[in-house]
Image: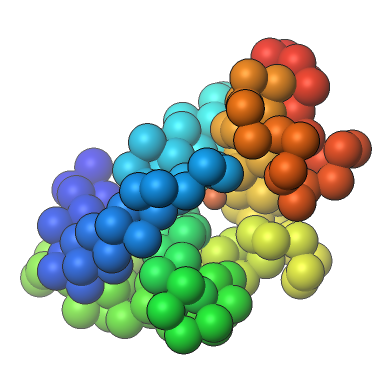
Length: 165
Ligand SMILES: [Fe+2]
């Protein structure tokens, strides 16, 4: 998965992720650092396998989408820019300036940023990738085991009340 590793190594990606982890170190609610991003990637990939979509959705496209989907979080905290919008902007910058030979195609990049832009549910998840991201982002959260659940701003019906939902 050389193209995914290239995103991970990208200086802008590392700068943003470090900032997110710094800003969230005392956060009681869900965090958006590397553990969450990898959880989402793996749950998305399980969805791909369960639905028999592996020929349609390459694993590195799925992982890149997951790794980039919350990259706008620091901009939301620092500048009050909604993180789905900031995420699209920063993901475009990162994918447009990766190491030689590691770029996703223009069509793949559009698919990825479309999913990032739709992952909060404000925009319609119009593609399979966007639907899988939205679902995995939610499923990745163990609300049933979270001490902050009574104060969480997720509505009761959105929270995961059991391990298998
Ligand atoms: Fe997320």
